[in-house]
Length: 138
Image (cartoon, rainbow, N blue to C red; front, top):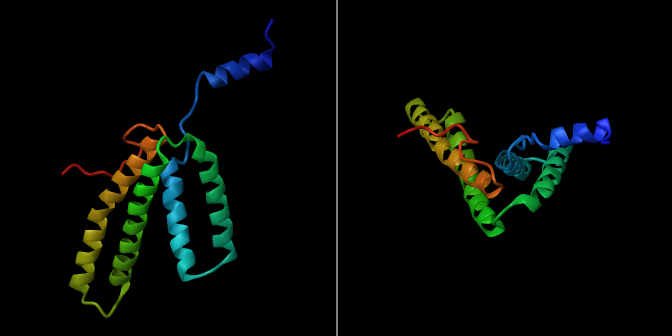
């Protein structure tokens, strides 16, 4: 005879859920927090970074190709560095409004690149395509 607790565990194991947030979302947020720390230090950022790094370590055993993960992450870091500069331009009141508007539009269009990189990262963790929704059809 199987105990009711064991039966419940069998039921739970038969219905696994996907990771949330996705591995790519965790890595993406980790990159953003690291960039923020390059510009200012705070206890809150340190605590957020510690938690994100803990989550990444938990995920580490699930990655299928660590070399590819590093390549994709490097591209995502470069993306965020470029976007940081672009956003600085958008907020700069000394730049003509038309140029700032164009930069904002280009930044929005470039976000598709971020979604594609995150989708590729998620695939390395066994998640299906479509886990990052902001990809426009050309």
